[in-house]
Length: 413
Image (cartoon, rainbow, N blue to C red):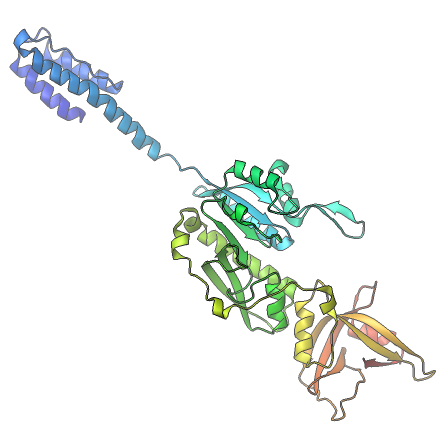
């Protein structure tokens, strides 16, 4: 634009009578252009004044406009403001996702920042029953995250909590095993939505215990899904999924770790599209006709029945590992004096026995073979018990437990 104006000015100067050399006027234009204002008097004769005024007016109004355009262009090159993200999670597996978010948010090209954390209130844990923050809260504090930005509402629908959340103006919320129902008032706050890291291949295993119920069913494949949260249980559109083959010896705590680790990677990969809103367009609705449920595990479910097949018992042992565990009652019989006692214990590690065949009579007697207790089960199957735990005691091997019986017989009840 400046060069065009100079061409016009030079052409005008060459045709007019001037009080000063043409170079002076050109210098005035250049100097004024640098400051965003161009005012040049051509000192022309009266009959030429009208065209001079037109030129001066053009220069005066064009230069600031170009300067403003230039400033706007310059500001557009500055880094865009990062999206405000709020993370919701509670157990240790959630801390894995939070750590991935912390790491990704520090990257030079990151599109988001962790603005706040929402987690379960402190609870009494361990033998000392001390009031302790949730694993997610503790992890955030260990990383130097501000305690004032860690929220611990009893319910996510509390008005005081929702007011504080609105004041932060989060654009995205990410949940991973938060453990609290999110009301509509919460879901309406982040304009880019709330995304959940769910450890199953949705629409399979919707609910509170997807990993445990999948192991209990003996699945050979599971996975993790990124899904938009809606009011219906785990029923929102799916952004992405990752599959994982399931080993027949893996227990729930180990599988949870694997799935949330894989889910963290998947989340970081998809966050750019979540931040720019394009994930909402590509997310696929779930087929509700294929949905299965994963209801919360209740403590009374921990009891085992050896009338079921060995594979069913084994799958339940690894599904309920950690909490609530699996319990059984066995009969200890002293052949010398005829005394019988009922023994309650937890089964920690098992496997389905494929080598030894059950007797045709289906005896209830438990034996030992290669360091494992052999328990007869339904369908003429047998279960190998490798580790057990007596009430108030440490976990021991089956061989050590057998030696402690000192020749007494062991039967299933």
